[in-house]
Structure formats: C-alpha cells, structure tokens
Length: 77
Image 1 (cartoon, rainbow, N blue to C red):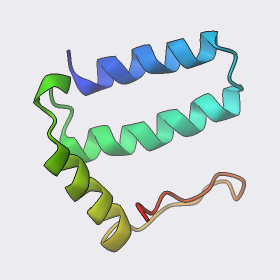
Image 2: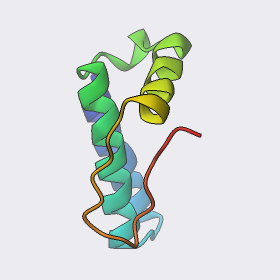
Image 3: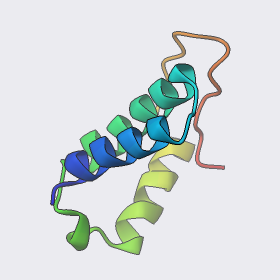
Image 4: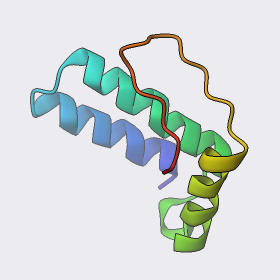
C-alpha cells in the first residue's frame, strides 16, 4: 500500500472519529508534504532514517507556505 493510500484511510478514520473539517484539512496538507518529499513509497518501505531526514529538511531547508495564519507552521523542531 502506498503512503498516499494509507493517508487517505487515516483521514477517513479521523473524520469518522469526529475531528473537525479544519483539523482533517490540516492533517491532509501536512501529510501530503511528507508524501511529496518521500515520493509516495509503499508504507512498508519507509525507514526511520527517511523520517529523520524529512524532519531535518523541515527544520533547515523547507520554506513554509502559510495560507492561513490559524494553521501552525510545521518546522520539525
């Protein structure tokens, strides 16, 4: 299963749990950043090292786009 498919299922699950549409949209945006960074690999191939590299990227190289001031910027800190 690709990461994007897992994220879709996660977002449906969170919606059923009753999270607000705004929260679901924030999750979608943030998780789509990860999907794009990792190039949508199969979930079972994602390593801890890849996630560490992603968080390092967020902390050092990522230039966040803030379209809504009420949604916090993810920095990896």
